[in-house]
Length: 195
Image (cartoon, rainbow, N blue to C red; front, side):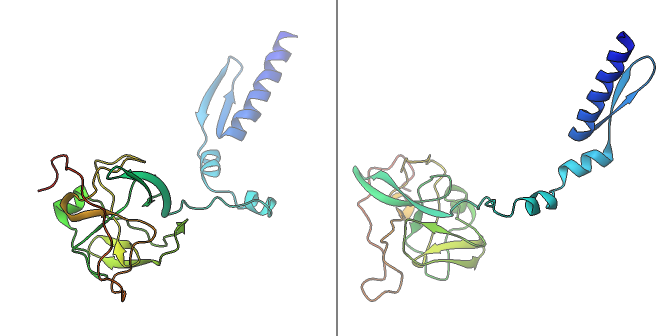
């Protein structure tokens, strides 16, 4: 009776292990777990039959590249643009609509926002991609967008630092009839980065 229970237990474990990607080799004296390359490669590869089995299931979408959020900028609460991680987005005043002036060590402090197919939520400005030395750089109303290494989600620390300003949903488009530059809030006292 005991050997029969062990045999049933080994058979059950083997079936479960094979379904999980491991084959069990049973011998008269015991069992050894060995990796099964056939089972492993099957479990790691995407299964087209799963997608076909649930045609009504929604496919997870990629995160929104640019969205809006409330933040305190220069002591005032305002709606700003943030990236998919919630980091505040900035524009660099010397940039043009076709050329990013942020490269090298400046780009290390102010990483450019890059995406091949950017999406937006909560903002109605024009979003596009421009090929620059930084890659497929995202521009909003003609302004290239950047994050700041000192920021955390919801915390703006780079306003007015090194000629960078927080991007807002209503930022004036570069080259519009009303203004060639975006409206900017006054810069707060810098934390040592205003050189």
